[in-house]
Image (cartoon, rainbow over all chains, first blue to last red):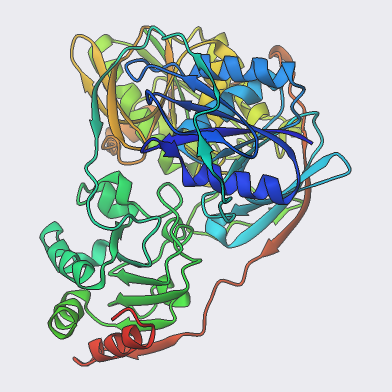
Length: 305
Length: 249
């Protein structure tokens, strides 16, 4: 099946989400090409295993609608049947625009898909991962938005061999571009993640988490509630609207475990939860649950590790 | 300035979501999706500055119209909705098709949404509506500054960026982006006399089809039978032991 993957660039490289989708496409032996949208000057995104096209946009203009129009053209010219993108801000915008152009409703929150006798079927995560919803797509083109960490990334060698197309700017000028500083281990790749929730009571108490994280070489995450409250930048949010993590050890500190949060961490290998409320849903996911005050448990951990 | 703002009526999120043949079961009484309160708040702030008219647009089983009332209580001027048996289980594109037709019928300049509904969670409708209306979409707005012009801050994967709101566009507002207002008794009473109009689907141009066929729903067994220890001062030791066993320390 002729397949187009919408690629995304993070730190001058193809994003892990793009590589995960590429991994799945290869395992299904799909006839795949990648169209990557970004604003980097010279990214190393040429692929040894399939065609790569780079749609270069200016970062001082919001012109994703123009990128979508270009992708629509490629889809029509090359008779693409399956369009895949990661559930990121950019791909959600692009796949939504394409769905109107192609008159085919997209499928969101896909965690698995298959292609059999020309038909695409999907498995989607709903209700915060509590249920799996299975669909079959009956339109000529199928558009899927795939959740991060659903598949193993492909092993690939990068080169500088790709076609590059400059996109026009739009009338929407972008200014005050702010890039969050990231230091320490990154959430998506870290073997240990420590996350904080409302049970930390006050932003200042996050110092306790930082101390523990540096002792365990862990990345720090947080719930939507504390990100909304401004305790942490959005880039550290774990959950449905944030990052999906799958570390060896996940330590949930003062997190009740709303489904919104569970989606982002439930596939962690070993979960340790500390929470005052014995009935907190996080304990249903925990391999080791401590019913107690996080603010008294963490200082003791810090003193004894 | 005419503003259309989307409000979805959803089953009370305090109750478990149930499905019938792949479609969410909707009781007579549904409530306003909290996600939409952020979009409504932005619309009302624009109304206060620019004397705009704010119309709630909605699609789905209308029932007791409680959710629509809640949207009007916040301060919107009126509501229009489409409720038709043929839209039961509508996919995101069909939903966007209907909502964009409603926005068009109102000659809306600005169309505002939350980023994704709490029940369906597809997160694509605002962008789809913008494409139908041939307007730019400023998605994931997390802050709004209203002066003589309006500056919107968008969430991006790496951080954020700002734009000036054009005269016509579609906006989606993230949860936590603004502080939604709570209606007082006077607002609640005033909402009762605001117009709510049902629009017939036959008055709209709908050319989408139901391309997604429901096959099955499976419940995932998430729960682990892990150890649970009540902390009496020494529980930290259990964590230390476990971290050693897992070779983290």
